[in-house]
Length: 226
Image (cartoon, rainbow, N blue to C red; front, side, top):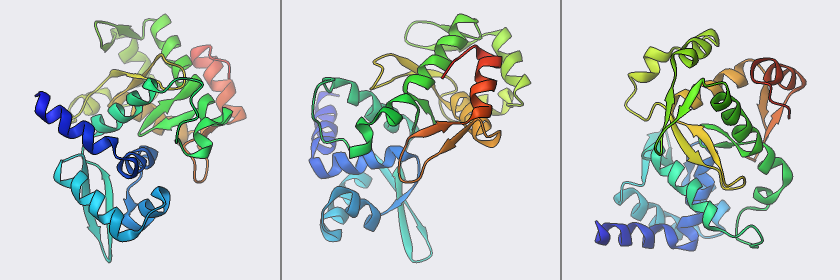
């Protein structure tokens, strides 16, 4: 275990590979060219780093026509990368992309496929306070009351539970240093909020805008003020 941990740490610790992993937190698949631009290095150098990440099963690659798209091989890898960011001191002038330190990204953003930032944590706090989800030992559980609430949001709980991934779990928020919820249930809630125009993604950023409708509905459903 220690040997493998050291190997993974060395892989992720390289500046170019770290930038690639951070860029992929956007939740989309990227081409090698796009990742080379994000990392500020050549296409050939990026390809070498991508090959190592794929070989280590940290990334997967999919061919679409003339292009090859890279993404995390498992969603848990995205959660681990996000959680690692909490090791950075608040005052650090770290090498996050420029917009990662802005108030907008800290207020509300996507963490791969679920909502994070101050808004994501506030939503999780409200769900916990209303006992719709229950905090356990390093885990979240959905209560019977919560099952009814999420079903009322037209979210198919049974279908989510059949997926081969985590259903509901805490994810440590790097900007708030507290937990927001992750897993297929959190991803479904994000999708629902986007579909209902409660929130909107912004171009070339993980920052998310809460619409006027979203502000009203978040207060109505969860007593969350943003």
